[in-house]
Image (cartoon, rainbow, N blue to C red):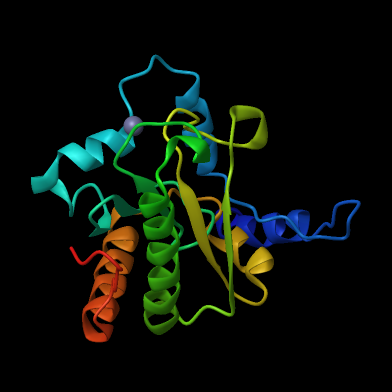
Length: 194
Ligand SMILES: [Zn+2]
């Protein structure tokens, strides 16, 4: 085995630590690129760009568009299938959104859960919203919800991929699989049909 080939295992050992709450942390080093990008000059809001570039949904990894929201695969995922649901409005807070939009965010999350369950067969999900940069929001100006599929043992599994950047083909495949599952299941099934 070459030295290089042994690195993922070494990394796996390193990340098999637990923190003080005895909770294992995901190792997702490609997110460093994302975190660094936050410190770079603002080249606009990528969620607004996804909203506006309606002809570019494949390249922008847009899964679905609703009346009031869109679902986009995260280019810097914690796990494969990590998805964002955002309102079309560029606003920072839940209080900025009308009830219909809040409802559609939840409907999108619900339907993504179903489509991803079929397409990716995860064992569980994390779903949440970070409000404010100190709370972990990478894009605090444009509120968005996260849905992150999880697999038993993924805290050990992910380090294997930890030394490489997430390849675009990987994201394209997931996009295609989730869209296909959604189509087969008639999703998204929104209370205000698209
Ligand atoms: Zn925006």
